[in-house]
Structure formats: C-alpha cells, structure tokens
Length: 207
Image (cartoon, rainbow, N blue to C red; front, side, top):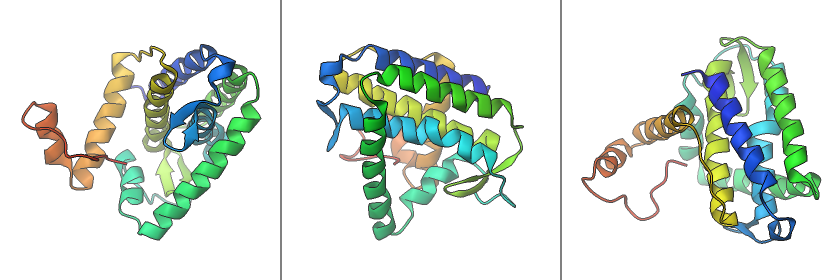
C-alpha cells in the first residue's frame, strides 16, 4: 500500500467531514468526556499538527521497528503512565479545539497542508523521533493515518453525519488494528470475531 496516499486520503475525508459539522453542534457530545470540539482538537493534534515536528527531528536509531509496536507500547505501559498520558491528551484536545475557533474546517485544511508538505521532504527510511522513540517514516505515518480514520469515524458518529473512506485506506488501518491485537494477546479473539465464530468480549479494544 502507498502509505503516503492513504494518509492524504484520510486527511481529506476528515477535512470534508469537519466542513459539514454545524457550528452549533461543536460543543455537543463527542467521545466520552470530550465534546465534539475536543474530539476534533485531539484528531488534529495527534494526526496532523505533530507531523511536521516529528518528521523534522531525526533519531539516532530505530526503537520501534513496526507500526503496531507504537500502539502496543501504550497497551503494555504501566497503568500510571497510561493515566498520565490520557490526562495530557485531554488537556491538549481541549486547547487545540479552542484554537480551531469558529472555522475548524479551514484550520484543519491548513494543518493538512503543513503535514503533507513536511511529508514530501522526507524519505521512506528516514528515522525520526516519535513520542515512542525512533521509527522509520514508513512505519510511523500509518499510525497517524490510523488516528485519522478512527477519530474521523468517532466525529461522524457523534455528529450524525455520513463518512466514507476508500478501501485501501480502510484496509491499512484495519490491518494495523489486527496486528496490534496479535501483538498484545488479542489476535485470536479478533480473528474469530471477524470470521463470525464468536462475539468480541465486552470492552475489547486494541487501544
């Protein structure tokens, strides 16, 4: 798969979705304790805004060799570390949501332009300093596409709006979720559910 194309495709879907959200709905329910504005802010922060900064900083070596390893690290981290990370994510989501102002779609388009411009300036095998440690560009960027796909679907559900990704973009993110499940002990459970052999346990998640 062309990870650069799927990232851009997911970003375009996200921007289009944001453009269809009525301003009056931005402070309504989003996901959990987040408002819809907070959810947009988190998506921008995790999948768009940080991309130029990460791609600009080289790492001395590879710490996380595969995309699924990025999410597996969080799953396997100590509880207190995960709690701190989630608190920081909530604070950042709210701050970024505020920055999006009254024209989230316009702001999002600007972040997409910055991210894709930065992506054009790096090679697939450049090793960059991600929050999880050194990763190749071609391994890290699919984790950002995953954030776009998952959270854009969250936004669509909260806003009651339709959303559609192309098959290649969905396949990339769904395959990544399956690999995270396999790496963290839930692979067989996920496989049996996908093949109609049993339901997923309540609360099952790869994140």
